[in-house]
Each structure stands twice: as structure tokens, then as C-alpha cells.
Image 1 (cartoon, rainbow over the protein chains, first blue to last red):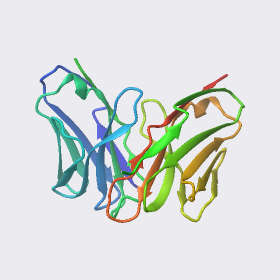
Image 2 (image 1 turned 90 degrees about the vertical axis):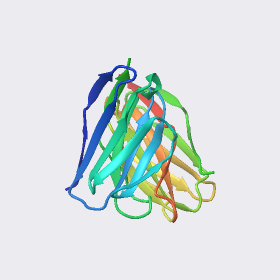
Image 3 (image 1 turned 180 degrees about the horizontal axis):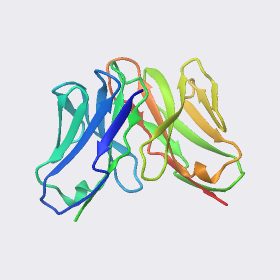
Image 4 (image 1 turned 45 degrees about the vertical axis):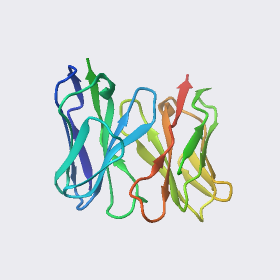
Length: 114
Length: 113
């Protein structure tokens, strides 16, 4: 069966510090991978998606970046965090192909920037 | 522009009561519509999927309906339980050309004992 792991689950970072969130998927190959952010009491905002190794599409201009160094690994990074980067970050995967398949989400990473 | 609008934004009901959540969309061409349940502090989980030819689909106490002509969907929860307290998100996918489904902002449901 397929599983998705996301870590760390919680982190508190000072403004200007770097960020690295990691997501890995097991039990499938060539998944579409997604990073979403959810501000408190708000809907999910798509940040990045990837349809293959090294292929990253950005949906929102910001100080975040994403990388996909391996087929089932997706990393969200920042060189310098802003207060506005606080939120709940969710990684998700779907089957290969156009985005009509079910999205399977990780458990999320709650980031607080102070 | 593809959009998904959900109503109400929030809802409070008593345990054992029924409720209905609404979703209107402008996504075209339509592929499918999913309802997700997101417990607080967790990732969303799919409840149902509706395709163009389907009008009604049930998953336990959850029943989703789809009117493809009016581009509306509803999620009906029967005999609510405390564990139904969550955010319910409507997500619509388009045919061809996009890897990105369109998300509604969700309805926050609170079930009180």
C-alpha cells in the first residue's frame, strides 16, 4: 500500500532562518507531488507541484522553493523565513497523469515563525 | 477562471442532527468532484468522488449529490456524531491540460453534544 511521510511535524523558527520540510512517498512510482499551505482558518493554497524528477512548477511567487531530487521525494525550502510563512504545510501525491486523481495528503507540518 | 465556492463557511449543529453542505463550481471541462474531510491539524482525506454521470453517492452517513447542469454539489451528513466535527472541502478536477484540481475554502462543521 502507498504511504506518505512528512516531517518535521512541528517547528518554531526565527525570522530570517532557513527552512527545510521533507516529504517522501512509498509504494508507488512516478507520482505527481504537491506542496500546499494552509493559514489559520483558511483554505489550502497550492505552492508547488511536480510531475517528475527535477520538474517543479510554482503557483505563488514567494521566498519559498521546492526540489524533487528523487522520484518520491519532495522538499520545500526557504533561505530566509518571513513572519507570513507561518502556517500548516501539507504534502500530497496523486497518481501519474493529469490532475483528476485522488490526492493523498501527509499529516502536515506546522510552522511558526517568530 | 476555475472556481469552487462553498457554503456555509461554518456551521454548528447538535449531535444526532442532519446537515447539508453546498458546493458550486465553474470548473470546465468537468472531470470529477471530490469531497474531503479535514480533521483539525491533520491532512484532508477523500470521502466521495462524483463523476459527470453520477447523481448520488453514499459513504456511510455521508451522501454526496451532483447536478452537472447547474454545477452544484451537496454533502449531506446524517445523524451527526461528535467525530464529524471537521472542515469539509470540495475539490473539482478538470479534464486534460492541468495537474491542479481546484479547491474550495471549506466548510467548518462543529457538532455539539
